[in-house]
Length: 257
Image (cartoon, rainbow, N blue to C red):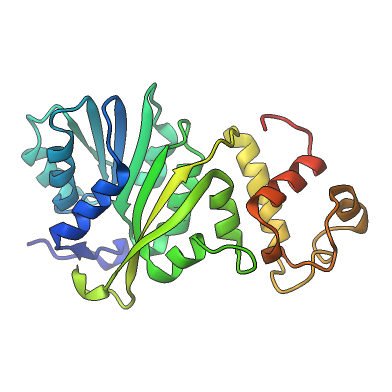
């Protein structure tokens, strides 16, 4: 048994039923690629392979810890359906491209959940479905709606319908983290936007939510609010992702939207 590395946020699931439910939520079909983030000991990888064994599906399992990458390479060296990649997921995701539909899943280190969500949305091929086990509090934030919206929920839900599937008690992990987890499912909307425009929109939302308890006349001028038809007395959490995107379009040239 490998000792978990604290700096990598390693907490390992040991209950196959939880992992199986995550794989089921993807709704795997032939002709797609699946990216697995942080396979660790391979409990999720193994169930994934059983589900894709009779289908035209390629699994890319990306592991930053050299110990686990070597272990998995040994386990699956003769398995054509899976490719084990030893790399940092935040460096690897921007390099991945595919001519097929892409889905992503994984049990994420809690401390890099937000960077991974942002990187997934900015991928060359934006995934159709995403299933992540993340910190419960963050899962609730990602799935929150008006009037409790946040920067993160607004950004993610511009591109995905977000659903909290089920909670995972901290006792299901080894070693047990300090907080409970939850599994979320993200399903792609029909919004198309290139990476450069996504980054501009991201900056726009950061500006909007820079004073989340203040009214919108704090981050935006009267002219901008009038142009967008936005009530200056509203707060950022009172606008839906659709309304924020429309406001962005009004204030910026169409570009790739």
